[in-house]
Length: 493
Image (cartoon, rainbow, N blue to C red; front, side, top):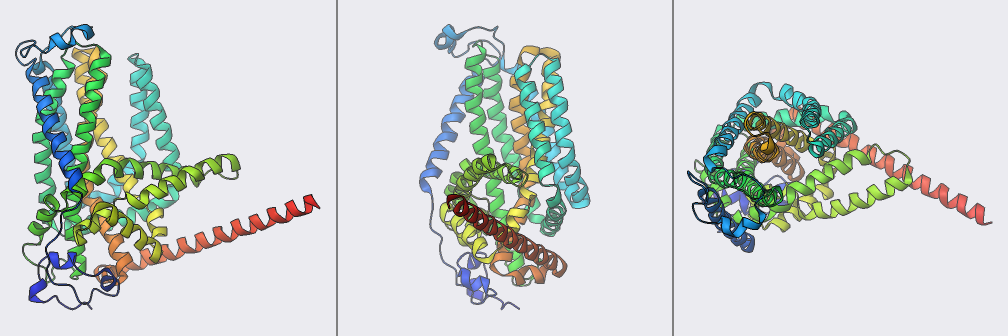
């Protein structure tokens, strides 16, 4: 059993300064409170400059066509690109407002329903996404949007192949997600943090959609409008990822704290721990969050796809060689960009790259990396995020089709991104609990055993099976290589 921290280390920061080796041996001797250092300040500055610059640009683009055309006389700079009949910002802005409302309702619904029907919701999400992508593909072909029809058809095919490749992993994945949801619902204050950040995202989206509506209403040709919308979408993606990962850090800190102190009812948990976690996330660790949010999502998505296809290639050596090359390249990137870094940031206050590296080395040194690689919880949550975005985009797209069929793809794709950000804020609460559970299990398995002995036994059994499987595969590859050497020697003789 872990000793209670002394009065001088009763606050959340006491855990942040704890020695990791002490944590692995049971968390004895938690270090006293120390001030945290600011990390990745350069990326914090870049994010703030981007936020101010894009905010100003979106205000100008929206205001230029608000209530009357060319209010700010910007069209003189784009007159040579004019190919379409111009409109007004307020003509298209309600469609984005509807998307914000639908995305918010879906996000809130996810948070509420996860506490009652988590497993069933995840199963439905996994299987219905392929069907929904296929239906949208058919609708795009019917509307004459060949490119987007092909794109959604490819997306449906990739989703189907991925689910087939990881179907045997889903029972363990659902087990992890179910326990993560149970953990989150035992800490109701983190749910309130997610709701608060969803409100902040809506405020930013009000300005963002104002600018996007101004771009859609402009007289520029499709090429110019699409370029502007791509820039605005990248900005929204980064901003949304930063806010989601800020919630990730806050929730991770709280989950780690609860597990460290032996449960939500632990008397040693300080009353202001949530505010401490939120304070660190928005100050000293915010630069690290901005930095990691640029790359983490893309790299881990690519890793999931490569892992899924790699396990189903079979004996095609040429294709296996190519996939292995990509796999090792992505694994190198994962060492420096992974979602488990946010737990290290929340608990120890490190920089992003050091946090990602330490988390990955911890997994590899303890063998837990085999369990992390087997788990598909992140991919399942991403499917829920994409599904929520598709529903949001479909609602606004259908409305746009009724009124302006030539701009349905522009409005549908941008509102889909809005929905993904809003639903992603709900999903990240569960994902934070998952990452914290794995970090705690790697540092000190007794933390998980004390919280839920049955879940601990199931994780340990699965880890043992995965390590045995990897050992058997390694022996098989070694035997195969030796046979190849013998055959080559006999051939040369």
